[in-house]
Length: 341
Ligand SMILES: [Ca+2]
Ligand SMILES: [Ca+2]
Ligand SMILES: [Ca+2]
Ligand SMILES: [Zn+2]
Image (cartoon, rainbow, N blue to C red; front, side, top):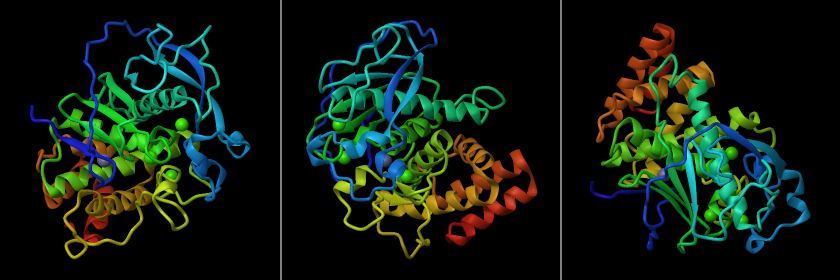
């Protein structure tokens, strides 16, 4: 398959480091272990827009942002290897659990990002399962993906559809210190799992970026509660402090005012804000569970090169099938408001 790279931002990834991708043979056993993470990132958790990377230094300001969690679905090897994700680090030694616990690494340790990647990919898959995917509904992306933490030079992260793996960069704030960056990338994996090779054109690519942003917010709000100190619509509050100057810091937002076709600029991330606002409005109208369920269910019917209009209609159809006429009306209204239907 021709390799395509779906990146977090428009910045071009110049160097991609990929090791031998050997199959993992460990047997999933559903084991768990405690570990320390950001929940979902320190800016959102603490409401401190003034936090800075300071070359990956840990400082007392971060202390209240660390949270002990239980990593689930581990394979029992003591490594960050489990049912839905295996972490391959190119930076630092591989994290290893001791007596059922990963040491309480902080952000200045390479292993902290490894733990973050494991926890948030697994949490994202658990979110999809909580919606019914894999039980009442067909499974979504229940494969084991590989995540690499990589010092590749740029401030970016990406999903490679040829290998179905995710690379999280370390430019600026380490990308894996922000759960919303991790889940955004997992969003690409989800769509690729539903429709292999999804996102070959400007509009389908924009839908891909928009869904990643939407999933980042939906999953983190589900896991941590809706943010009280930052706007819920703000994606990657922490990673974006490195490259945004306005407050609140956001990589992108779900609640913008872009409208089709006059807002189109021909770049997938920018144009994705048209689509993500529609998804946001569906969520506001129907609530997280119904909105996310119909949005994900609809994606099974998308063509790899879908247009906005075709995907919007498929999403309205999914709303009708799952929840009936009122939900379909609300879904249609969200797309009409953006000029997409
Ligand atoms: Ca770090
Ligand atoms: Ca970064
Ligand atoms: Ca956020
Ligand atoms: Zn992306």
